[in-house]
Amino acid sequence: MRVALLMGGVSREREISLRSGERVKKALERLGYEYTVFDVKEDFLKKVDQLKSFDVVFNVLHGTFGEDGTFQAILDFLGIRYTGSDAFSSMICFDKLATYRFLKGTVEIPDFVEIKEFMKTSPLGYPCVVKPRREGSSIGVFVCESDEEFQHALKEDLPRYGSVIVQKYIPGREMTVSILETEKGFEVLPVLELRPKRRFYDYVAKYTKGETEFILPAPLNPSEERLVKETALKAFVEAGCRGFGRVDGIFSDGRFYFLEINTVPGLTETSDLPASAKAGGIEFEELVDIILKSAFLKEGVKV
Image 1 (tube, rainbow, N blue to C red):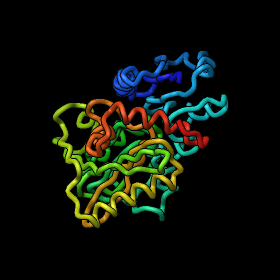
Image 2: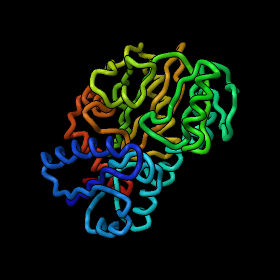
Image 3: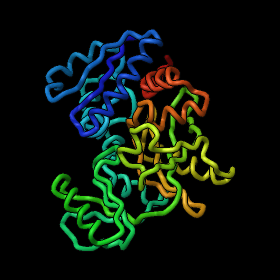
């Protein structure tokens, strides 16, 4: 099997994608796959036809272009097989506002509103969360407890993104649920509780060793665990996601509040999905193999 490994990209998550890609590359080598690495940059579209000679594309592009449905739509048009969700699901999940509207009534979501112009005070009161519609790795996310902090967040985000989501802050336990697709169906991995040393699970907390305590499995009683896993899987399936992914949320007062779906989650040494997989008895090489083979399941092909 010939594998095209795509990493890098043009988004603000390029560094994380390169870290994920390097780790996947080593796993592919140990697994014995024939692979070629593509460091995706601005001129990549001129070379995209080269991917037709491969059996499958392993996509570890995070953020804009690689995770928002754009790249997936190009590959679909060219008839090229790839890991992860299709163009429509990727587009929906990368846009948090679209995700919330799409899943409203399916899962419990904290109150939210879109803002396109500067405001002096939060329409949802405090504390609240300000975040971009389309961004990953908690880039551009602010937790605000005053008008001053709220105004600062808008001044940072509105010029760059044009519009932002303001969401009610739910105090509780941050949890993430990783999901894999195998020929047996969807497998929900052990729930991971995140206890960041910082104010919340931001970019630094996600990608700096020692900044976040991973609790695996999350200390939940059987009914709580069932609620968290069922909610995550319901969101994942309803959004049409495939292959692999991660669902993030807040567990508070016996309820699990949905926050987002990551269709191309990080695969670095500090990332959530590999940690959850290991807790479920899946080492990194096997995880990479499962993700790679899941690309063929869309066609009903077993590898």
